[in-house]
Image 1 (spheres, helix red, strand yellow):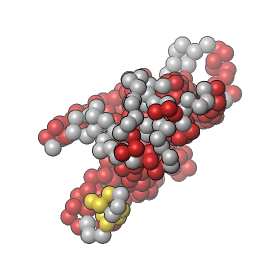
Image 2 (image 1 turned 90 degrees about the vertical axis):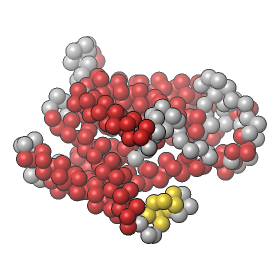
Image 3 (image 1 turned 30 degrees about the vertical axis):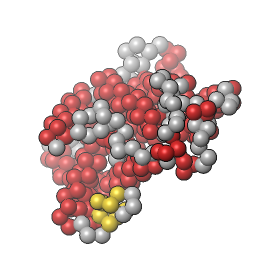
Length: 320
C-alpha cells in the first residue's frame, strides 16, 4: 500500500506539472502512455509476437480467455507487423493533433502544410488516419494470409481505437485551448472527474455498500458506491468550477456544465473501469503490466480516464 501511495503521488505531481506546461512536453508524455497501452493490450489480447500458427489451438472466441488453451503456445520475443502499424499510427495521431493545435505548424510548417490544414479540420484528418489504419491492417491480413488469425486483426483495430485514439482526447483538450488557461482547465477536468468518481465510489462503497453492482465481474463494487461516485464527481466538479469562477477564469454558467459533466463522466468512468476488468478476466490476467509500482500497467491507470476524455470533449463542445 505504501508503494502504491508513493507512486500514485509521484504520478499526480508529474501529470500536474505536464498539464501546466502543455504543448510538446505533455504531448510526449501522452504519446508514451498511448504506446505503452498499445503494447500492454497487444500482449493481453494475444496479438504480441504471435501468428496464426501459434494460435491454431483456439477453436472458438471463448478459448481466447482460457489460460489452458495457451499453455502450449510459444511466444515470439518481438512484436509483429500488426503492432508496428499500430505504433506508427499512434505516433501519426499525436503528430496530427500537434500540427493542428498550431504548436508546430506556426513555427515550422510550410505554406503548403498550412494550406492543407485550412481545408481539412482536425477531426477529418484524424478520421482519415484511422480509416487508413484499418485499410493497411486489412491489406496486411490479405497479403500475408494465413499468417495472422482474424481475431488478432480485429483485436489490433480495437486496441488502436480503444487506447491511443481515446487517450489522445486529453491532449486535444489541452492543446486546442491554446496557451490560455482553458485548455489546462479542461485537461484537469478529465482527471478530476475520473479520479473523483473512483475515490467517491470507493469510500461510499466501503462504508455503505450492500447491493452488488456486478457480482460476477467485480464482486467488491456496489450500487451504493456507484451512486456515490456519480454524486461525488458532480460535487467535486462543481467545487472546481466555483473556484475557477471566483478567480474569473470561467463564467458562472460553467458551474452547472461542470456538474453535469461530473455526473455523466462518472457513469462513463465506471463503465470503462468495468470494461477493462472484463478484458483482463477474459484473458486471465491480474494487471496489464507492472510499469507503475503498486498500480500495474499504464492501462490499469488509464482504464477510466480514456473513456471519460472523449465524452468531456464532446460535452464541452455541445454545452459551452
